[in-house]
Image (cartoon, rainbow, N blue to C red; front, side, top):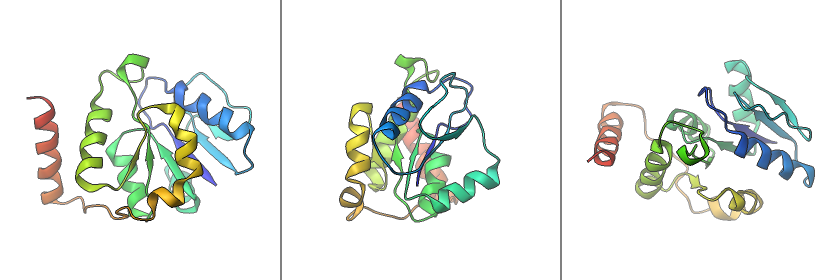
Length: 163
């Protein structure tokens, strides 16, 4: 099963939802999408705008692959479950967020930790899914503990972005 989550941010992330629905049309793997505020309604998979947190936790545990937006809280949870997330950051240019902080933070964490698959061009998402096992075999499958050291490291990354 592949889980796709767009988070709870109030702007749409239709670009990801539509892409994955089209992907599901030509693939046999079960797909579950949490669509959030996207007006698009998928026709080729199981979906809901929002699931209960307990349901999302179970989906993350059961999923072979988790595709997520660029919110660090979400992909850290995927890493805690021993999986490398495929991260598709929301982009300002598509009116998916107020700025490109998800992209900037994801780039920096990818560089520092190499524990996410970062997708900047959504047309490359299908290839990442299809080659997931090969891509992740030599990647770091761990996540930092959310402690003081991690918090300070994240603060430095964010501060650097705004210099």
